[in-house]
Image (cartoon, rainbow, N blue to C red; front, side):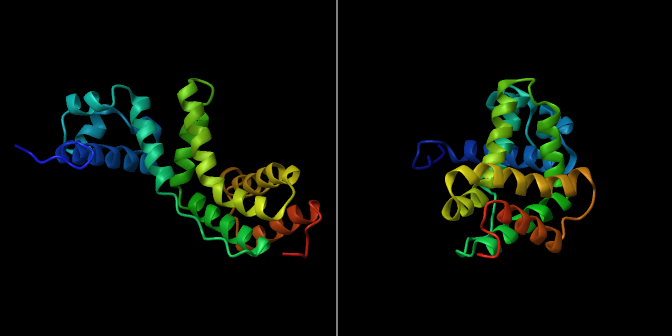
Length: 192
């Protein structure tokens, strides 16, 4: 007779869930959406397809679990209170994630399927919110509400365009220039 965790879930079930979500997430970030199938996830996790289907009946269920893991584990630089420095650090961190390739695959899979299913659109929204939460918090603590969303879109969009679409590195110098331009448009240039 197995022991139960404090929330009543058998530890073996928790281990299975963790192993499967880890395998699905690893596949997603290293190889892309199309590789995340029940058969491949089961093979990588070391479980039967029936076990995977029992907990994640659809491919979108696997993707939801993977995006959840990615969002829950998102690590962003801690704000220091210096508007410019915090924005630069956060955007350089984002640029490094893009340059690593894994974020390109995650975003590409979601964007490719955008509009095809409300679940995909919700996953895209969740990923965006988790990825920009820290930057949005920095902007909210320094800028008027009316400037927060446009500034966030310009900053994130500038780094995304540079890295993902232009295929050029979003260097710290590029990010500094972008931040300075966006802050100048809000009347906060040179204040920091």
